[in-house]
Amino acid sequence: MEFKTIDPTELKNNFFHDVNNDWMLITAGNENKFNTMTASWGGFGIMWNKNVSFAFIRDSRYTLEFIDNNEYYTLSFFGGNKKKELGFCGSHSGRDTDKIKETGLSPVFDDKAPYFGEAELVFVCKKLYKQQMNSDCVIAEGITDKFYADNDWHEMFIGEIVSVLVKE
Image (cartoon, rainbow, N blue to C red; front, side):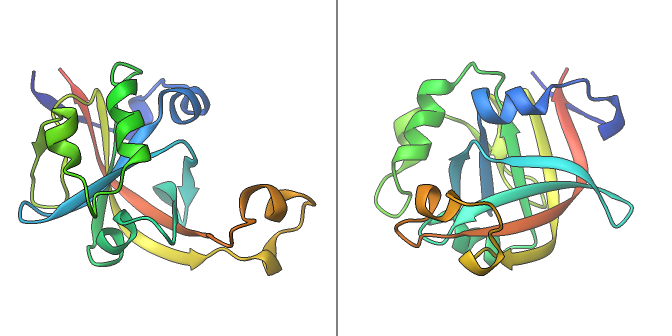
């Protein structure tokens, strides 16, 4: 199956469900070297009059260096059809595991960032903003203790959605 490019305003997805329950792969790099990770936190919206994604990547994640070193990243959604593979990508590091070999996923390389042929929906995003999250900015009680007791904070990325690809 091939992908076609659509306008993001054509999407009818429930991204609260898709991100939280079906998960997504965040991927950056190039054909020579790339990494992917599973994410179940993130979002979409409008910022600076642009369609954007919000991605959160912990400092400890190997994918962070690929996001930092590249202008673009992708968010790949599989409609819940690849939970086993996404579970593997979320529980193993690309530092010491070949996630592609282990999962059988098929990377697709375009001129911006890799994504996966098995995906049903792909967002290609250009980095616009990055900020380190920290305890000084947490307002609600309990978040720091519950999610950051090990001090492994997230980097927040805002990325302009430059294209949306869907399976034809």
